[in-house]
Length: 269
Image 1 (cartoon, rainbow, N blue to C red):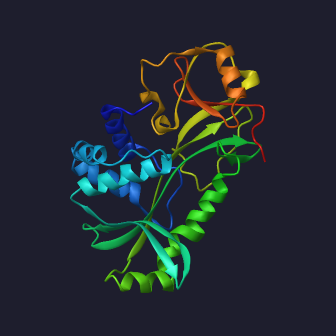
Image 2 (cartoon, rainbow, N blue to C red):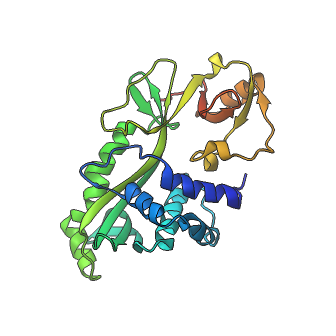
């Protein structure tokens, strides 16, 4: 299902208005910086939309999220995107990438931004992604111990210096949602207390009702799904979920928040 122009515009606004998933301390909060720019320039999403429409549509949700951020930067007066996905090398060995290099003209800094859009389900005191090999703790550790410090490495500094660049600060931008299951799991202390939330149920506990399955491109803003899509009943949803290896995101007119219906084979660890 292809996102419409109005749905893409809504996703741009959502990105600017939604809370972060992970607290940014000690890093700068790139999401808040974008929100501040939006507060001073309310036409920012409308200017960003044509830039987004001109880009090839990304199938991977993470790549789509990076496009949303990039076009908002490009459409803003405060920011200037210097580079995306800068590969850092140590001689012939690849160390990793820097998601974005961004000039913040208000702060007069060249900033290294790292981005993450993630969805996790609380399960037995852990937070697991739909692919249960992905965990919230592992992602946060990778962001804070690997991705964000990468621009401070001597190899990165030397490589950027050859391009006339010097990173002044690192910034984090996270969006996403935590889904609470039948047995509540407390989020870690470094999760933003006002993060977006949802729910999940095992397929065996699926109540009666009419349901709408959400494709991955709708996950950032699931309630913006195509209204013409046919709702399915619970037995049909149960059969579909059980044919999958991962949880299926759904919406239902009786629930304000989106949720996941989880097959009996999950988690597969």
